[in-house]
Length: 167
Image 1 (spheres, rainbow, N blue to C red):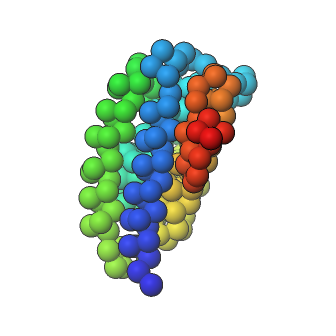
Image 2: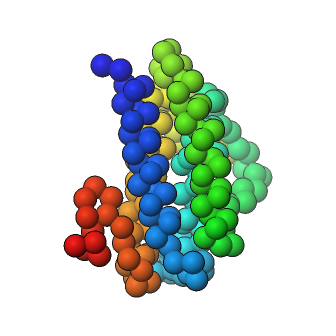
Image 3: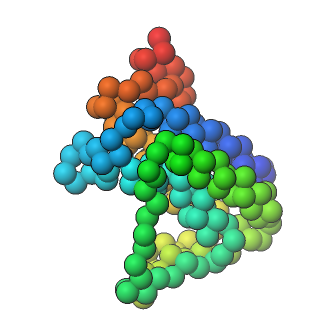
């Protein structure tokens, strides 16, 4: 079994599904919309979804460790428009896919860590990190976006079959 080939196929499919969901965000959406006080804003959530074909995925594929000190000031991407959101997603996708194809053999078995303030929050083989912290994480947040779209009255696209809006 060639698990890299499987990861490429899965990445291509899930990235396309995520792109479809991002494209369903209405052009006039309120980027500050939150379904609950503890929820991310729509802008923050959609910006985070670009990380899984962008910086987060690239850091997983091209490095063995991502480390931030306690004083690190991370500035999340929050799009100002649907156009900006889709442009960033599309721009990041090509580079990440190329890095995925270039990650072969023993590189998948190397340990990968995410360390913040001296604590390793993720510490597993790269193949597990890519599946869990990139692919599954993207799917999780895409599911959240589905709920946001429904609550905003937008049409929800089908992902693994038709949605109620497509039947």
